[in-house]
Image (cartoon, rainbow, N blue to C red):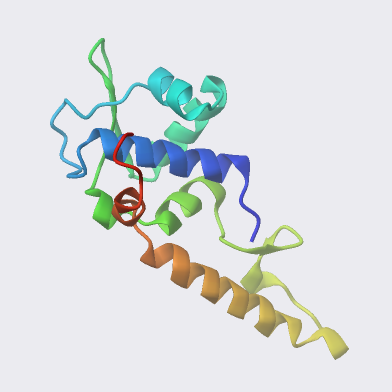
Length: 145
């Protein structure tokens, strides 16, 4: 599995939004985080982050609120959003073989067994990222965020 800068930035942004919400995921208004603040705190180029936030919003993981008091908030509590949800929202398939999803990798002859290997790798990655939530990661974060 290759973790792109886009995937890394998306997870960091989601964790920052989750931390700002107080961990409850409720849309209280106090937990809204501005894109510029996320970019600065997480050291992410703002123009790159804006595209990532759009993908996360389209995937139903973030709400956006306009206006001077606007910003971004989680659509669900952090214990209901997995690392896998975020990775799929910004990157598509968790594992690829030559740019294609692992399940589409086709081989013949002596290499035919590779398909099973790539599918097993995909399954192992999915098990980890789909069982790790934002709340799990926040529980291991230092208390000063």
